[in-house]
Structures are given as C-alpha cells and as structure tokens.
Image (tube, rainbow, N blue to C red; front, side, top):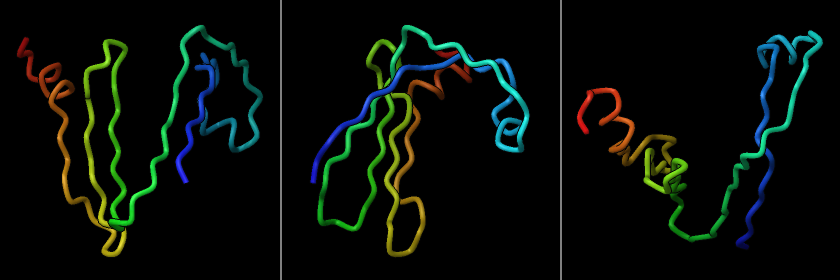
Length: 86
C-alpha cells in the first residue's frame, strides 16, 4: 500500500510540549508544506529520507524493524553545515 500525505507548515508561538500539557497556543500556518511518502516493501526495514528546500538529502536512515536498531544513518548535507564544509 503506497500513499502520500501533505500538510502546511506552522509557526507555533508556544512550545509544543507545553501545548500537549494543556497550555494555550497561537499557531499560524505558513506557505511552506511538508509531505511524507509511504512506499511498501517486504524487507522488514523502514527507510527514511529527508530533503531540504533545495531537494538535497539531509537525512538518510534505515531501521531494522525486527531488532529495532538503526542499520544505516547518513546525514551528508547536515554534516557539512555543522562542520562548516561547503
């Protein structure tokens, strides 16, 4: 079963954890959207890829569902930002 879902981003004035605990919040929708694509595979592995606004991969992970551990983790773009490499 493959499908995708999309939602608008938000600017949340109050911290989300306080809202969960019952605090009042002011949330303003933004023009940016986020999306999530689900693609079924029979490998018992959850593959997660995140892209930035330039469509560059900033996170690439694989989780083995049977043992609940990370099988692969790559953060090439994010690592470059942290290290100052261009």
